[in-house]
Image 1 (cartoon, one colour):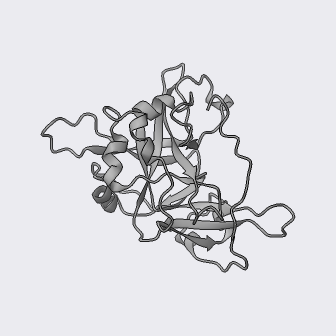
Image 2 (tube, one colour):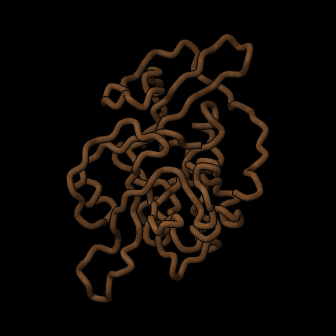
Image 3 (cartoon, rainbow, N blue to C red):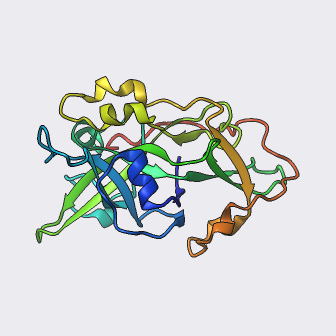
Length: 253
């Protein structure tokens, strides 16, 4: 899964990498958590042929996907992730997969290795970032939920897939990474149906990320400073995947 991440590059760098419209200045965020506003990139639908407007724009959404058919979000599970293997066919994500695919820019994400019970080991947090630095774009979905009084809330989720061999010793899931050369295809919901982009929803190559053990200060969302990324010494690094029964998502997901 992906339950925490960071976005720390400047708006100028983000504009250059993702080709989006100018952003107002925003602070580096070192500990982004569910229910908080997150930056996502969508296709610029209003862009006309020959226009000099960028083909993409950035919007803020609440991290926690709410399908349009939900009557009371308080009675609905918080969907921060969508499983890539089943998102195309699941009721919660089917419409967004067809009409509202987005990119979620990040500098990296956090994951926790949780040892089996009785091992005597403590959970260990990891900062997982692109080995070559820079920003990475996770595959995401967006949905606008409307209440009975007419108010609207834009919401989003990050797509995950089975972890590659490098991340599996820490956790069995990881975010889906969309490469720059595939940004346009992923965001193109007019001509690219979900089955046309299914090949993009896979784990990234094993040497793409590096995992850095960090302190458990990241567990508290109120800790938001750059030193969250400082490396700590781990006595026994994880050496084998954590095995969990994988029952997929509930049927209405």
